[in-house]
Image 1: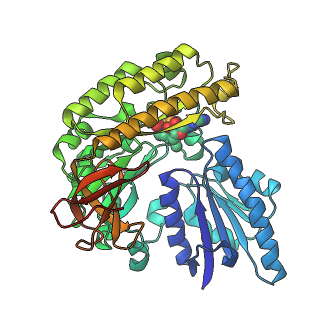
Image 2: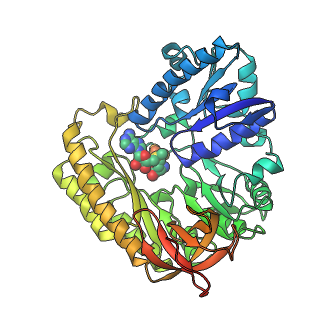
Amino acid sequence: MKKAFIKSYGCQMNVYDAERMADVLAREDYAETAAIEEADLVVLNTCHIREKAAEKVYSELGRVRVLKAERAAKGLDTKVVVAGCVAQAEGREIIRRQPAVDAVVGPQSYHRLPELLKSGHGAVDTEFPVEDKFAALPAPSREKTRSRGISAFLTVQEGCDKFCTFCVVPYTRGAELSRPVAQILAEAERLAGAGVREFTVIGQNVNAWHGEGPDGRPWSLGRLLHRLAEVPGILRLRYTTSHPRDMDDALTAAHRDLPALMPFLHLPVQSGSDRILEAMNRGHTGDAYRRLVERIRTARPDIALSSDFIVGFPGETDADFADTMRLIADVGFASAFSFKYSPRPGTPAAESGEQVPEPVKAERLRALQALLEAQRQAFNHGTVGRSVSVLLEKPGRHPGQLAGKSPYLQAVQIETDAHRIGDVVPVRIVRAGSNSLFGELDDGSSRAAA
Ligand code: SAM
Ligand code: SF4
């Protein structure tokens, strides 16, 4: 059997795609390896969202070129493929910059990887093919499915029609597409049958998902989540990433009515300034976001919120930034991702003459992250002394420990031999570390993890 090394950068969609590429390659007799030096095929599944992410790929390709030459000196052939969003955005330019690359394949065409590999050096496929990529992907073997673990990603939606003025996704991932219900359920049942207990339902705009249900009626994500909760073996559901504009009443109600749906929601707001939100083309104001959060908290009072923020978007003034800080203070986030604005070629905001100087961006990011980190720590410390349910996912840091997640997506370490991976257990949180919580079984049978 040949060996394939697949490395993924960026979002959860890429993690899912990398797994599916491994399925496609398994059909061609490639086994996955974690050791790049023994790989006959190296696939870099890339991210184009910020300049830094895209540039990382070229430095990694420099290292892969050396490896390929070393293997060639031993008479071994190595194929190098660039996949993902940099592949889509830059196409043949990648091979011009780094001739060690044999093929380039976009996120919509990776099901055609075997044909591409057979067509020799310099093959590029960045089409948005008419055939259904998901239908063309092979079902993974039972063994491979089992390796997905206790918690698995399940892609239900791809692409984006929102065209935020800073973002490359609509160009690299193409138009919004929802997978049909039957296809999603077939994959969900296969994963659950192989031991998966939690789905994180994913999409670039996951709550824009819509489809025709088996009852012939139009379904939105809320309805789909209810159906996924009925899949035997499934204990927990999450979904990401949501757009505030697509948070409909059925989805909000699912947070009230569906016990399997975990009380954690990643709902990016990007900025708290109405002027900047409009320039970003986000389609909502800061107050609309606050009202939405209020509605969601009415449905599920303990919900933990997370968000994405961009600082230094073109034209952002100190007053705009202060609006963002105020929104953060008003809403309160359990966790968040935050970035300096990075101009992306071909997007409207990159053309703006009002770019914010780098030191200003850096200072705003520092202040914003300090506030968000204080909120995150406060949230984590707020769970100390409480009993929460934990889905046990894997062995912990030390022998005799297991690690899992709280309903609020916090990592929890507990000391137990009494339970197995895949169980949901009550845990009393005794201590909050900087990145994990530590707890003991709430049935009086266990000591706290060190
Ligand atoms: N679809 C999701 C949404 O609308 O919130 C997020 C998609 S994007 C993969 C993830 C995050 O990257 C965005 O929420 C945004 O904060 C950040 N991002 C996107 N483009 C960026 C850019 N040009 N510079 C800095 N951050 C960016
Ligand atoms: Fe990018 Fe905006 Fe689409 Fe999210 S909604 S993927 S930020 S264009």
